[in-house]
Picture 1: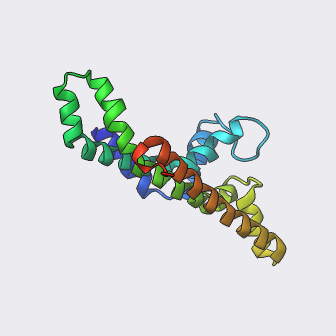
Picture 2: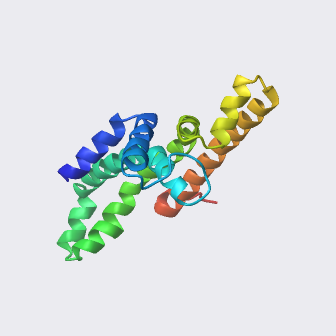
Picture 3: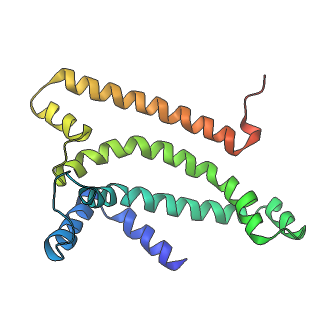
Length: 179
């Protein structure tokens, strides 16, 4: 538990560009295990994926832990234990399923935030992506490109919210739409 809290704290306090630079220095320059930039092979994806997901993974770890602690103290979990259900079933079926609702909400929000972080990560790792396209569109005053990327971001927000609402109904039957 303490190691998980420490990893979450480090992940939340370290910006993605700094994590990317540390990964480049350690794994590419110092150890020569991974390439510094480019996109030719699967090895080129490892460091950008870690840099992009570091903050978001830490946020989900922390929220999942706090949600589980809240749910584990609730009456229906205590009742399930008193009924003699195996601990694994109590944790998976009763506790984790109900602790997922705030985590799904955070996932929907973070999906949209990843686009913002991707701009920086793509710049650090010299990747051509949608973030870099937006950056270059702003830099060269290419307004149709900027408008298209912003419109795509809006569509992603709507799609993420719709997906979160559908997942709510799958996780908790009480949330389902009644006819």
